[in-house]
Length: 473
Ligand code: BG6
Image (cartoon, rainbow, N blue to C red; front, side):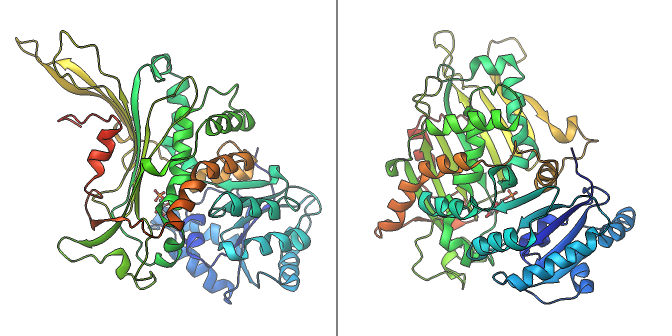
């Protein structure tokens, strides 16, 4: 249920993330107020003009909404490590909350990791509401490995209870990712085939057609594995493989997620390839290392493909191939489930069935299915059972991931947020690999051209784990 009289305080409001994602649409409760807090000194007018310019394509009818939305905004500048500054913030909050019976404060941390702990402590000490709800929304990076993630948790824990913490993984707010549980558990024909007995391999792919333009500094410290695989892709993998939760309650769902993560051994370096993009073939796009914020000798992976396994009865032996890369030939996030071969005999080389769940762009779910080619012969042809959202749900608006998640946080629904033990379990799967890659200086990522499909060995890599390419794939 949505609380009335909520104030959302966006810490780090002058930063890029806040600009891009937080103020996008007018989806908040009518009486909600938003307070920006950051170090940059600016007045309310400037803050408003920044917020406005970041809202996508204002049209005539949202002009009015926008004006209304802007009324709810205010801005305070202050330091991240001084009680004085946070007391100024509290004073401002109290002014806004005058006359209210209870005060509900939601702190959204759009902050660099270096100031994260200090801000969370200062908030607790100076800005924690005396009555009503207190929530803190935090963004990755949640550390760089299991050890540093635990350190962060330890710093947060004495001040903020787990039920007050909302760790965002924005992939959990995407429409198609939320659909995974419904597809699996709401369709008996999927449920019946959902195991090693029928599924040969699963691929989860994340591709972006642009490099790290402008974010090289941040990216070089993390690399593609920490940036999108340990979180976004692993979340998708978890939702595909977890057992049926007892209910749709947040804790029932998260219990099952943790259980399957704990059945996943850590990823072995022998099941991993890494790449880094070079110049585009036509020379128009620069290489990763040409970015000024990136060290000349960087070994940072901008591409990785790796295989995870799950040691339980349902999944033992099935390779889960995760692939992610920047500066590739297209934008696409999808899950591709390849079923086992049908029994041979009457058919020669008939392609496998595949179920494809396209997360973005152009959300869709389709099944590659063999059919008789119409005509006099018994020749087969690969066809598709196709649910394309644009066609089927053309009059429905798909919410942005952040819209949906912030609304969940306002309602206090944790289903699509990462629990502390889940975070631990996910780092445990990746930490040994990350340390291995960081420590072994002789491991150099394979170069691939900007705008290509990735390192040349990629297709051999996926084939070696059983993925069968067919002409139609
Ligand atoms: C972020 C990563 O978490 O996700 C970015 O830090 C990446 O590197 C982004 O580009 C992708 O999100 P989306 O929603 O654009 O697919």
